[in-house]
Length: 408
Image 1 (cartoon, rainbow, N blue to C red):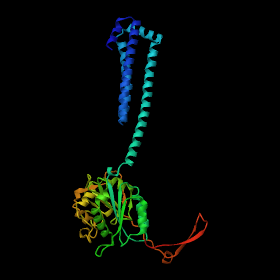
Image 2: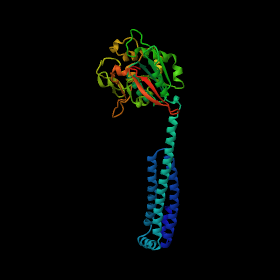
Image 3: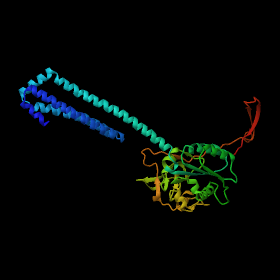
């Protein structure tokens, strides 16, 4: 730009010629500037910061305008009035001005077109990278995220298979999950074992008949599961670096997000809201600044841990470092075992990690449901149902009888 001052010392034709020469120099500078900005823009986009990339694109246009304006301004500033008027007339008549404007706008169009191509290209790269990342996560080794160990006591009843089918369908969607099922009987039930095999989940299923003195509510089965877990923790955990234990009854309703968003992220002991529990629509801890300060419950608020069995999960190492079990009674919980178990684990209220309280719209991810008891007509329940079976190979029609069992 300093050289443009010499325009005032030459004739008009020479001024125009020197202006065009300086303008060509400026064009070259703009090309270099465009190249540098585009390189910077590509690097920013590849680093996945599209907003900064768009700001850089705007800076390209602003830089063009600024350089072009300075060139014209200096030409007008250092040319006297008469010479300026004469030169401008000659520029218009010679077409120099029109060519300058045409080149100027063509450069802007080319820059915008190139930027659009780069945005499209980098968007394709980012989409491809996201797809590869998602495939990588989905095929990641189970050791990369916490294992979930689900302990479920079960017993014979009419609706048992219906309840466990629903639960098995939910758990089948959870990766790196180990299911321990304990039958309240002296022997395993074939129908339950077949159901567990269909899930393709790793599991352990064994019988443990409730001993005299224990409540008929799964207390003894959970104790046997804890004993089995402590004796076989290495076998169950496998390559997983961290495991979390969750007690899940076979008739509750579970959202998949409970396992993936809550349980899997527990560090020591996690806690959350439970629907239809303790005579309330919702039971939950009272949370202030991500700290449990009390309990929003109807039944027995004075319990140290006033939560439902479905409302907490504990890290496996906490379980292994204690001898806590579900005993025959829990006076501190007025008959409910949760607070006694958590206290026996050596936990305090400040150890609790509340989940689901950071969202503006809080959701219930587990419901303490119970299937309505089915009342069957004894004469119908014990009847033989006749089914016609056609052998497609031989064409022989056979009749098979299936007996409906009232309890499975």
